[in-house]
Length: 301
Image (cartoon, rainbow, N blue to C red; front, side, top):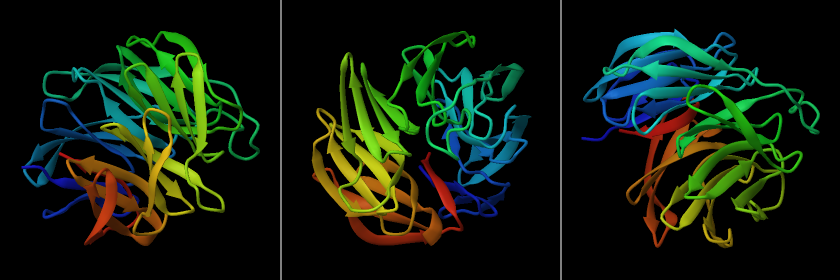
């Protein structure tokens, strides 16, 4: 049976229909691909990672390690389940940990530090790692501070990064085969990179400032959460043409998760996770919402 787990800046990880697992600043959660193990960041100046055994609706601590950086904001596990990556926003460090057969941390971390900056004053004074994604045997890390998708081999060997337009501020991103989709937090855009072709569109068609947060592919559509307009945009994956833009059900949609035909949106400033049904790919409110203090991530597992 699947459960909805919600992380954020409240007292801990909330399991809908279950209880509260107390942990500080668990702003992002990830699931092991084959084991009943959940990983949470502790978004602190001295960042932390915790592994939990999933026992139905309950979580039991398994192991913990430092994130080796400042303010970890994202964690991911490779599809084979043997490697974990964490992105530390504060200082831009990305860190890799080997995982053993139980899903706990094994050996010394591989610490990937970075340098660089961008043109946006106050936001791009240095590197700011924001998300880690495993794709085609490589680790990809978005860097809001340097306008890059950094690339590494699994042993930490750096490769040539994918450069984005200055001031993009890449946050979350996703691959579909050779295509790369990137949400630009600082310029309010979505970028599609397909070989030599690049398409850039506004993430929201609403007036005013927009700081896109999470981006996810589902079928032949791209979904983007827009903070400021407080909407979810639906775009065609082929060319980023607009399909729909709907209210997120609250204030400051930090993250969302899609599970089948349901969408769960973490509206951070509204202290709610609002649920939707997909109808022809467009989210429609289903009247349900969960009260959660400062939600920042939704994980279905």
